[in-house]
Length: 158
Image 1: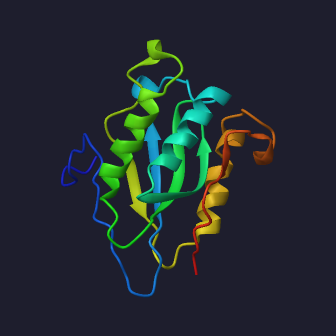
Image 2: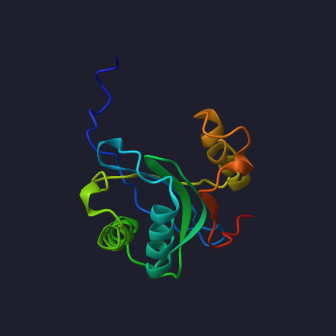
């Protein structure tokens, strides 16, 4: 182990970098508290989609909802959008208030992981990796068989 590396108990959240000619797309992973496998059902899926739709400061692009975590891509809805961390807290709060099974609270890990895609990265390639998660976890044989995935907004990537 390299002792010169920081001992991270929480992920770093670098600021979003706006470049005049490149879109901003952030890859986010949010996990459930204690990695509880409570997401892969229609009720939870509906609550999550409603929370994202009500949190209009950022737009959710492609996403995969796994039993105990979520991977998604998002982009600011406008130039002056609230910071990503505030937006995530907001939709988590909306989802928690509308959660169909209160006995499952607390729902979310406090933090999340995020990383801005760089110009040389391919949104399509990252998406392909993410959508294979249910296959790698042996939940389905083919990615298209997983019912808890989709795209709310087309995020344009040049």
